[in-house]
Amino acid sequence: MLQRVFDLACQRRGIAKNTSKAKLLAADVIDLFQHGVRSEAQLIAMLSGDRDYP
Image (cartoon, rainbow, N blue to C red; front, side, top):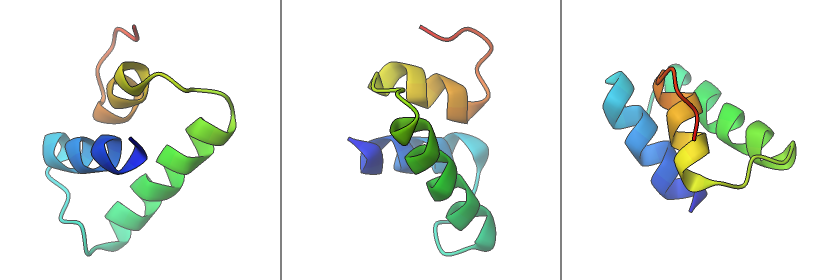
């Protein structure tokens, strides 16, 4: 699930997966998950820059 979130967030932000920005985004995905954000839709919204979190 976290891989799907990461892939979609990279796509929506226009970030290539082999860049330092992608590494930072991956760290954000893991950090949010470790801090209790378990909803895939909410993670995607938070990491894609959407304003409304489900």
